[in-house]
Image 1 (cartoon, rainbow, N blue to C red):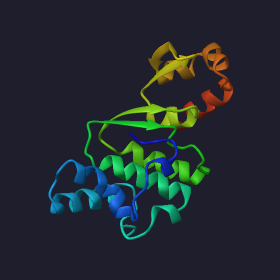
Image 2: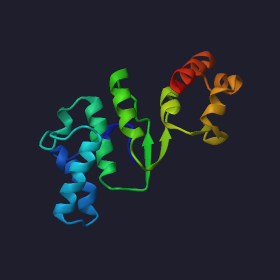
Image 3: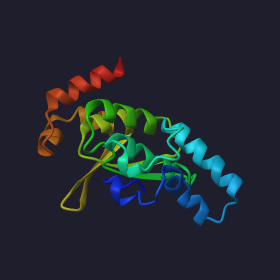
Image 4: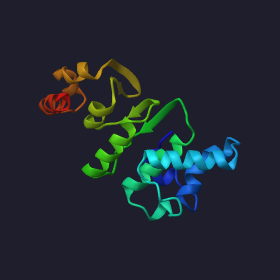
Length: 166
């Protein structure tokens, strides 16, 4: 699971230690752990950060390290809680592109419509903890009433959808 706040997920002295934490606790041998750390850091574009402290990184870099900690576990399913919160547009785009290329099934919790458009084939809408809708993302973007009900701008949603199709 990828936490909304990377500071809740990163607690080791170095980036290597944070990313290695899961595989080590799975009982993997040191060579396999090192391989997984390198592969995960490559996937998030942070190779060379192994000896740095995550607590001295930017918010976007911290989020990418947090993603690497999850990727190093080689799970079949990734659960991502508000992955782009507190990121500037460039950091959001970078993280979305990194998430997009991960092969795992993804469950993404977000309030950010661009994240939904870029990463989700389906949208499950919740209200007061209950499922209200489960539909293809395209169906959500074409439903003005539903978008307005959940506080989204339907015109912006349609524009965004058209831009992504190009």
